[in-house]
Length: 125
Image (cartoon, helix red, strand yellow):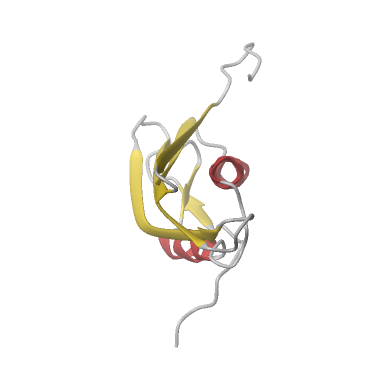
């Protein structure tokens, strides 16, 4: 029996919080629905982040991404939402989320969202 989709991102303690390193995920089976037509949009979601105190647990990430399958969302909105939710759950040092959407209507769309934690004394933009 498969697990149902979930909007919850689970985390675990970073095993090396004193080291700056990057974690990369490629999720080539992402789908959501076009909010105009209701047809499926297919994408590869690429996530690159430098953890601070927490890392994302992979099964919860898979179920989280799966939760978009029945939701209508513009490419720009869904990519930003994924980034915002990961930032809220992880508070990473930095993160980039890329939505690389398949061609629809002759247009190939790539949306890139970046976040970098502000240094002490620096305002977050």
